[in-house]
Amino acid sequence: MTLEHNYKPRDWKVHPPVTDAERDAGNPRKPRQPMVPLSHTLSEITGPVYGHGALASGDDDLTRNAVRNGEPLGERIIVSGRVLDEDGRPLPDALIEIWQANAAGRYAHDGDGHDAPIDPNFMGTGRCVTDKDGRYRFTTIRPGSYPLPFGDNLWRPAHIHYSLFGPSFVSRLITQSYFPGDPLLEFDAMYNSIPDQGARDRLIATFDRHAGTPGFALGYVFDIVLRGRNATPLES
Image (cartoon, rainbow, N blue to C red; front, side, top):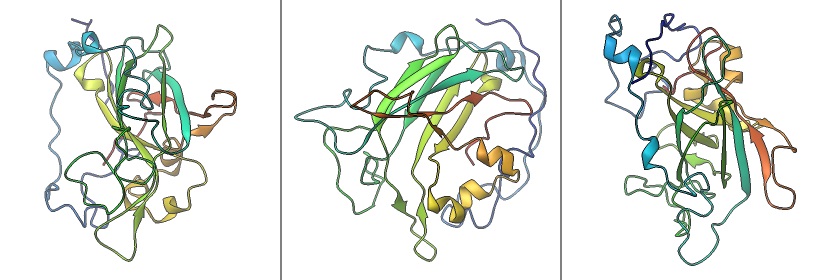
């Protein structure tokens, strides 16, 4: 079990609202009433953090962890960064899980009705644990955009979902990262539901040619802050 932490309240200026009419147009299960704040319990602020022992070699390489009979299709990328706490200190041993669409913009699950091809060699999920300096690294395929089932030809910008477990359940984070220069960001209700422009900018990974592998993959850096004034915004 981890040691107890004292956490400052979340700054909801940097997180999306619980309800948003435009963003929630295709989701009838969203809450209709404001959230009720509750005090943290001992079990929330002490952990335990779990799941690290289930990691297997290669879980952080999405271009290899589901290969059946060939290479996955699409542009190979490496996404890396650091996980920090609200005071800017690195968080070692944080469990990170990611999931994403394939290069054609389709997820590998039955609930995705997008008329795009499934890649039999790409599952679109991976996990890793941060090192002693809070660093993580995934090798994957750049995800494609996909259409929304409502609106005037609305498409979601390319993105990767992140789930993180920090030193306690209070630091739990589910978020998304986007790619620089994506023209669809201007029209994306989920991205634009975050009230603060600076917070929105923190969801855009930075292209870094030194973070990739020469001749193999381009590199993007996405640092994550769990809670605090500079927190990475929650996924709405």
